[in-house]
Each structure stands twice: as C-alpha cells, then as structure tokens.
Image 1 (cartoon, rainbow, N blue to C red):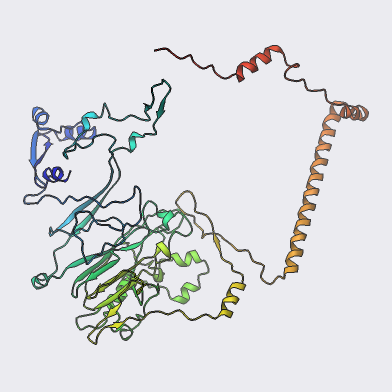
Image 2: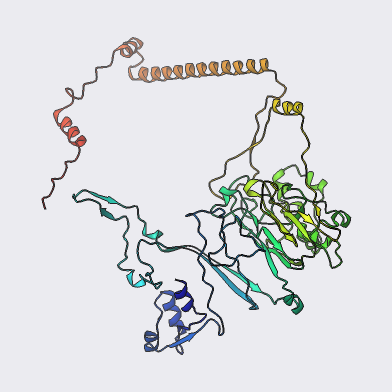
Length: 569
C-alpha cells in the first residue's frame, strides 16, 4: 500500500475542491452542512461554481510510509521491537522494550499553527478493502450493498438446519476508533551553523499518560517520561517540555497525587502535573541531595559552561517556577509547618499553595527550555509527584558520553553508571541496604500488621467531595483471653437480641389478629377462639379439584410449541 499512498499524497499530487461562485456562499454552507456539497469537477462547474486544485505546499516530498511493528491485538503494553519495521534504529533512543512507536524528526518548517492528527484505524481481511497490487478494493460505492452483513447465518452442512450465526458487528469492521488532533508550533532551529556542522542534535523529552493506576487510566497508560532511556553525545541538547490535562475523571481514591482542585462540583482533583528531580540510582526512587552546588558537584547533568552545577535549572525542573509565578500575584508557597497544620489530608494535598505537590503550577504545560548536555555520565531522574510503584513509576535515564546497558547478570541494575569529569571514570554512589539480623527478622514477622483500606472505585468517574473513607480493625492492647471473652459476649448479646425481636414480632401479630377478628365477631371471645382453632379446609389437588376448563388451559399453556414439519426439496 505504501507506493499507492505516497504517490497519491497531496504533498506531491494536486487535489481539488469546489469553491462557491459569486453570491453563493450561503448556499455552499447549507449544502456542506447537509453533506451534499459538490465533490467533483463536473458537478461543481455545471452548477456555476469554481473547481480549484492545489497541493499542500509546493516543493514537499512524498510523506514517509512505514509498516508498524507487530503487537498482539489490543495489547497496550511494551513489545521487544517497538519501532516501525523499515525505520532506522537510533542508538540515541534505544528501542528495547517499549510501546510501539514512531520516532519522528521534526521538519524545519517554522509555523505557529501545525496540526498532528492521530487515528487508530481498524482494518480487516474479511473483505478486499485493498487489492493484492496495493490499490483500493472496496470503496464508498459499496455503501448500499456492503460486502458483509450483521450477524449473518452461514451454512456449514448439507442439511437444512446445519447453519450457524456469526457474532459479526459491522460497526467494528474497517472503522476509526480514535481520532485525535493536536495543535503545536515549530520554532526556528536555535543551533548555530558550527553546532550543526559538529553534529549536535536536539532531542525532545516529554511525558505521556494520565493520572491514575492501570485500571483507572485504561485504555490510556500511566505517567512515564518519553523517551525514558537516552544515549547522547556530549553537547547534544535536550528540550525538556511536557503537557497534560486538567480534566481527567477521578475514578477512585488512589487515582493520583496532588491538585490543584479545578472548581468542579465534586471538588476533586483531575489535573496532570509532572516535575523532574535527579536520583542517585535508578532503584532509589529518592531525590539526590540538590540543596547546594557543592553537593551536586560532579553528580548532575545540569551544568553551566564552566562545568559547575546549574542550580537555577535544577530547581526549575523540580518546582516548575511555582515560587516565581505565585510571587507575581503577591502570593507564596506554604511552609511545611503550615501544611502539617491542615488536619484534613485531602485539603492538605490539594491546596493550591502546596508547592511540594506541584499544585501551584497553573497549567499542565511546562517548558524547561533547551539544555546542553555538558556533563559526562549516566544520570537517573524521577517525578516526585507521580512516581509510585511497579508500573506506576515515572523515571528515566540519560547517558551522556557513555553507553547505558540493559540489565545483565553482572549488572542487575542495567546501568553502566560511570561518570568522568576529567579525573577518570568513577562509579556513581550505589545504595546498599543495611544488614538485618535473624532476631530482627523474627521480631518483624511476629508483629501484627495493619493498614488502611480505601473504598472501591466509584462507578461514575467523577470522584467524591470528601477524602476516601478509611477502615481500620485492631485489637491492640487486648489479651487473647479478653478477645475470646469479648467474642462470646457479642455472640450472647446477638442471640438475646434475636430472641427478643422474634418474641416482640409474634406478640404484635397475635394482638393485631385478635383486634381484627374481634371487631368482626362483635367481641365474642369464645367464637373467636373456636374460629381460630378451626382447621383450614384441605387444598384441592390440581388433578381432581380444579375444573376441567382450568386444567385444559393450564395444559395448553405449558405445552411446548410443535416442531414444524420438514419441507421436502
């Protein structure tokens, strides 16, 4: 199909549209709204309009057409070979185990109004949508006589009743499930000619996904940096920028961290925010000491022209300029003491002045700017707001001037984390877990464990105003004997309550019946007692007591429908 698609692209071939004749603009708008506007040269000109043909832009080459990498049907996870089949592998962005993707080199077409359209199309081989030579097969002319039918009956044998019904939904064949468009800008290339001649490359580092766990985000995915593994040359440049949404539906109590609240009726948080802080090691999930330049000397990827830590960039990536933006409106971030003074956890974590949760970032878009990678080494980072556990981790790694390897038996962490800042390569600090004695293990296992159980996800996807309910069951401080006694006491109380309730209900019913029957019989208690003691008449059996007409109706109603006679062909 690629030869046909590239040869017939509007990049290289002119296509036409019908433009309204003088004074016919209203007619054109009405017909377009009805889907009846002219779509070919003959009918357009015949009705007094102008047919105009043009390309997207003169001088464009044919678009790139690639066969996507294979993935299991409806598989949203990672695959071993993630890039397009005929796309050149890039050492700078190792494919390894990633989601299916296409690595796009942004064209040098400066424009503030570019549109990226992503379509999730489903095609099928149940009919010839394409001929074997790569040209279109079935087209719109078959709309009134479709090649497939809804839930058809298909003969599989020679007998009249040897057929099956297929579960075939024609809405699912040859259709577009998702159609998303995004507007973006292409800015002028900031590299000097000397940088271009030296092979300096600019890479985008973005964020994918939405807030929530794997169930809550489906069919999307959780947060992650994209690409999250890069092998760069010294002096290559990275544009740190990402965006998100402020309107993700909250589908449960554990959907994500932080706010800010967006004013929706349920007062919950639906916003995406991401920040970036360096770690000492990929396994740590803990910030590196970034308090001072001395602490970061030789340990950070953000350095200035002199090789010294660029503290302004370090703090910008961590806090997204929240302090500066709040100061512009005469406000500030809350201190730790002020946050801890808020007893309601939900209110504390969603406060718009909680800069620790990145809540004061007023927009999900963040532009960290171009950063020249001047430090040699392997650098790992994470998002302190979103990084959680397992498949919810939001971490990444950038290797500059060194090659980062995948996990091996000798390097289980999968990182060749060497740093060379002029004094020779050194191994980055690796965290070692403290040794735990056997006695400590026994003590840990002997203690009871308790945790809070959050409520199940709500079914509406719009969250709730209050924080998630918490349930805790504990018998701390109660001996075994006391617990057993308490259990038997509760059982005894339950049994007494049950018996008392049954007795009260029985007395209530007897008194009610006595009052009712007594009023009908004029208060004659002897007659009442004899009537109550009189046995009920026997219920007639269905076979002998019921009238014949009723029996016939019952038999007719319960009889199965007759089997139609077979027609001889």
